[in-house]
Image 1 (cartoon, one colour):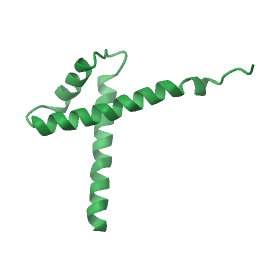
Image 2: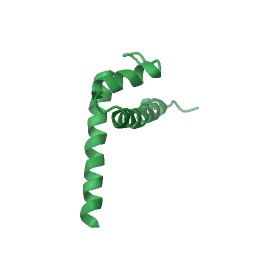
Image 3: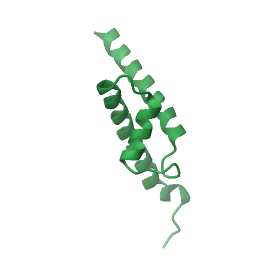
Length: 85
């Protein structure tokens, strides 16, 4: 049987991280919509606490960076949609 390449064995982990990032983004947006006074950082902390994620399992700093990337992408998509209509 051929040896599995390292990159292939990391694919399931990559999907898990991407799924958590997507869920976190929706969670934080929902929290901010319901309670605008909460900070993004507090919403991410709440997400991690709700899913019982440790810093080793899901980095808070990485989650914050990913949130702002997704938020920027969402704004660009909205702007493009408004410009096209």
